[in-house]
Amino acid sequence: MKENAGMQEKNTGSANDELSQVGNLSVKRTRTEKILAFIACFIAAFFIWYYAADHDTAIFEESFSSVPVEIVNGSGFSVLSGSGVTVDVTVSGKRNVLKKLKKQDIRAFIDMSSVTAAGRYKFDLQYELPNGVTLAKSSSDSVSVYCDNTSTVTVPVKVELKNYRFEHGYEIGTDDITTDVSGVIVTGPESVVSTVEAALLKIDFEYSVMTNSVTYKGGIILVNKDGTEVTNAFIKTNITDVTANIPVYKYRDVPITVKYRYGYFNSENVTVKAEPATVRVRGEADAVDAVTLEFELDEKKTDSDTSYTMSISLPDGVKNVDSVKTAVVSVELRGISTKNISVYNISVTNPDGLTYEPVTGPINIQVRGDSVLLGRLSPVHVTAVVDLSFSGEVSGTVMVPVSFIFSAPFEGKVYEVGTYSVSVRIGASD
Image (cartoon, rainbow, N blue to C red; front, side, top):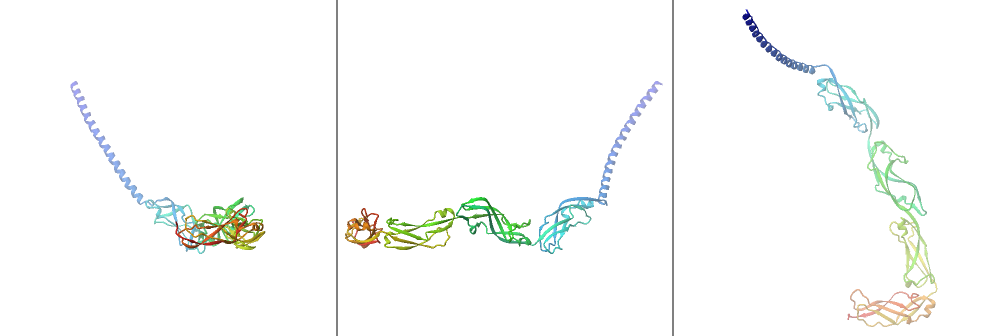
């Protein structure tokens, strides 16, 4: 019995082992089937989703920013403002349509065909959209446009000065103001540009005292014929700054003075007058201060009371205000007389060692000076100097200039009248 029981237990154990093995195989098969079933379901779900998305009738929205607004049918006018505008839009449609849509597929525009005159206008935004796409909303429903014909003119530059002061004898040369440009090119709406008369440079000197010319650089404004500023956001100029040279002139009455070539004349023996006595000039201070009007009087050529005509010549940049072209210098001799005298004392200057025939006298001359001194003058007080200085070779008979030396007390007070020369025969050099 025990043996049979043992055998049963043994058999029972073997049966249990077999069942355990069969159960493990069943579990493994179930897991594999589940995984395969999951994959199959996922694939089926994807295809179902794709089909539904492709054939779905649901409406979706998509937003696009900075869509450019076109301007069409401009009617020949220039758009001065309103161009370059963009708008943000939201469109709606089926998903499969929207996913292919790009910003450049959306066309926003305004139609200006109704414009017949320059001015400001407001236009409704219009859209051209692909099939299946509709506008849901936009950041703006309209665009304001300013249009006109574009015009270009060149206007002169003018300079306006204010709040300046001068010392006595000074003034601004308003007629001589210069600028680095003569004209300014103005471009903008024809209706506005046509009113511009000039480009104005305003200079405020803030009450400073002006004694010298100045250079000033500043911004310009556009003005109409009444001097009122013309402003418009759409006007442009080729330049914005102008440099002006403002001349400041000094007036001066320049005296006409007389210079004596040899110094024989003085206030005691001659009276000299100039008519006019002064000449009024104008120019920049440094140039005016340097002006002199001097007449040189040759005593040796003045043998009696006489008058001379003097030309008035001024340097560049200095103006003759009175337009005086000449002056008359009158000479009146006082206490001066004339005397003829024969000169026997002859001296020869011969720096080059020329051979020559001796010069013999007398040389007859006329002298002038103080009447009292002339009464005491005799030939012994005068020496004639013959100068044989030549710049090149000479031979034969030539005329040689002669100068005269007066001994004391006649020196500087008595002089010969006119010029003199003698004939000298010159041979070869030693």
